[in-house]
Image 1 (tube, rainbow, N blue to C red):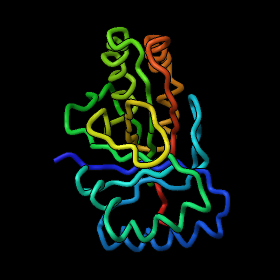
Image 2 (tube, one colour; image 1 turned 180 degrees about the horizontal axis):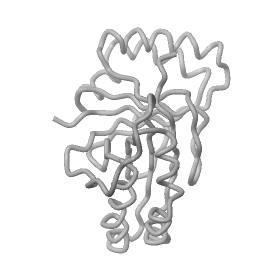
Image 3 (cartoon, rainbow, N blue to C red; image 1 turned 30 degrees about the horizontal axis):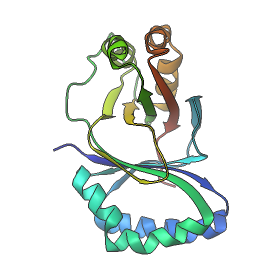
Image 4 (tube, helix red, strand yellow; image 1 turned 135 degrees about the vertical axis):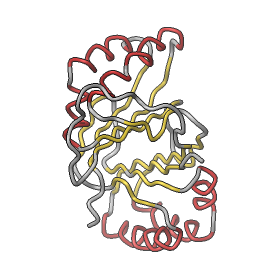
Length: 208
């Protein structure tokens, strides 16, 4: 069964007030059993715009991710956040299909993984297909694997682009190196004019 993911993007105006929300929400997530993949850590916006804080959280399924957002635990925490932040909040179904095949020797894994979070509006679906076909090459070269690639989604707060892709890499450095590589430069050339994207590279949560 595919996983489910929360992807909130936030601008926090009052961190002291926001902390009460985070404490209550974290306690609820601990009881529920979801897994925090990324929060805080290093980040770099590669394309478009992203808010100041970006979170990636994994659930056992999309239905669980939806149910927890609308359920009593998170419904109590949610109002504590609203006065202190602006948020675009997406819940999306995980990818359960083929992964990019390895190309050569992938980068060595680090203690903390790296992630791409990509939101896209595709304005030329036929023209976009060559990018989709080719992009497995740079992803396979740098050890990327899809966590999210399309699938069901619900925008619960704010706004978001029509399509979301999330990739996991062996490290933050590998995730950055993939984007900056000649292989991905070629992929970008294939995507140019076919889609508009917001893309951020973020480092995994370090447990603190």
